[in-house]
Image (cartoon, rainbow, N blue to C red):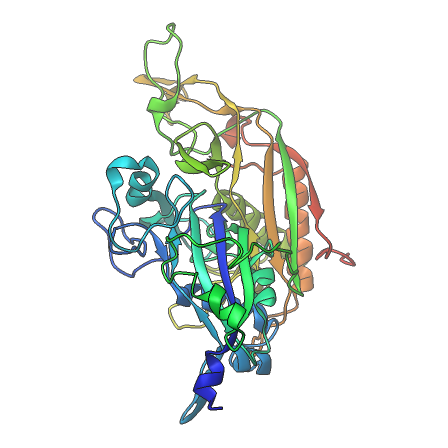
Length: 471
């Protein structure tokens, strides 16, 4: 029998449904209407995930420590091309289609938005403001931008076909997707693109079998169309830990007030005794919440601590501890502009114009909490006299309380061709920075000069401890 006939005769068919734990940003490379970069959408204007984005993530997960182009198992399963030599991929992945409020994938073209508030919300997306950082990890005043993202809670379904003869099975792929350190899209190191697999329908089909052929023809091509559960039954998903990827959770309890600004002041409820509004509000963000198979929009019942806010503080304190451990004191060894310890680059990554940058190894996800805003009045201080400035009364609304669960991960795998220095010093300094955060010596957010943003906490690892054996 020819290779083409064999390829379409026996295969694993999987339909996977994921739910975003944080916003997803897969850019088009083009500017949006008012944003600096817009998300990939389908013909409806709804968010979609290209199959190539999912395949790229899976290739790297399967390759492990090696480059996907050098790993024999990865080359056999996903295909390769070296000059005039190569082979086709044994794995096919469709685009992922977003779900409506009834937890059903919608067609790629032709949607009735009038009857579905979840789809109307998804078409609008959410935008996050960002600022460019300089070599010292602080704000570069000329680099403010914003990026649109798919809101947290959105669900997508996509299809995977694994042809007979592949050294990577469908179980391997779904297990890798279920790992807690797996992310999609850009900004994964600062919390974007986290998700979980909530459903997996899978079955092996041999079309030489009459019963398999009978069931296979019951499964329509469109992901939004119904089919009998017996034709493609649901299979339990078990996460497959990726070797060299450590995952854990950081439990934080605020000591006092804390504030991540940028929220909508109109969402702060004020009592009748206040005669002026709040100017600086804590950050919240619209998302989708699910009760069974019904989706609804949550526009602000929980407050957001972005992963980027945590990562920025930890990165800056890690740089301090690297210099402290190497006894590079500021008076005797003042750092040059844009100078960054190589160990810090190895852990947190870097972007350089000459193409020598590297991805970071630390993943820190968003955290959500329920807390009570507490409006506070302030006056602007005259820098020359130290006294209050007339007509400059303002108010902010820091949060009081609200326990936070922050999920994080560290990639400890060796990188082929990489010239990274030893990670021991960087990991020890990163551990010191987390210890500062957990013991109230490192603040998050604004108002630290008046006591806001300090926490106590505990870090727990799931299995692999990246700090084990460090001095």
